[in-house]
Image 1 (spheres, rainbow, N blue to C red):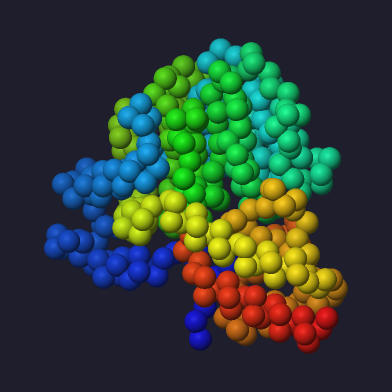
Image 2: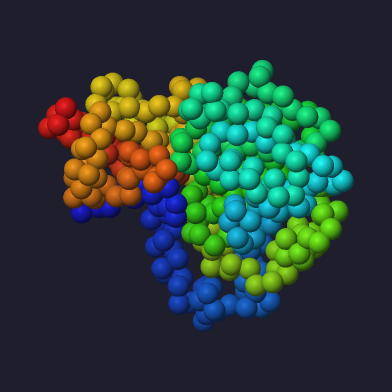
Length: 359
């Protein structure tokens, strides 16, 4: 039985990438060592990281005046590093509140700055991205921050906000590499790896050169972006295996046509699942049509008493990790890049069968 993993993260990885990593596990390119055994100061490992960065730059069209950093600590650490490094003498910062993960970023930023809510999805129950015409951005603040995709709520921005003269900062943890973006519109992008990039352990930061420097007083050495930019992400031992795996994913995406191809693939998968939900009175997705995520699709059953039976039946069919987040309940299907269309077809076939039996 084939297993289709709908986990929100750590998430499904491309099977051919896993096979390649398996093939190279004991001996990378004839050097007699596994990547996990290599010194990051040796001759071999820097080649891996340099190629990973080159492929990522090509994939995303990252301009030359941006640094690519491979860090650790996940998005949680970035929630603190962003205000610590980008205040630049300001006292206030702008945040857009669209759900649980943006709220966590707001709470952490409030330790270092006065947070102004430029916009909030609260009136919609956090089921829609706030209309940009209603935003109130403070122009004397350090930056504007938003979360492009709320992994738990299934709300995704379908546009890049206009921050005016302010640096635009984005947590793209759960939708980076799923579609093309104009990196030059941003001051800083960060993303935990364990969705579309690779296994957990590495955090990607893309930061414009002019934003480096002048962290707030007392910033630890390891939380200063300059530290990592000046040492090519090798100030301390980097998460070498996770970066290697990410590099394999970047190379694969380039071979397969890049992010426009991935966007079309993701749109087709999400359209099939949303259509199945919308054509039924048995399933429901609460998110506004113009804010629906292509990556994370939450849904509920008409009778929540059937949740356990639904999940048990799904597992029997090899459809795993469909239980919704503990804060949201219901179900959630995560359709990251590596989820094949066959997996979504298998899911909707099961959903229709379950509805016939219990609807």
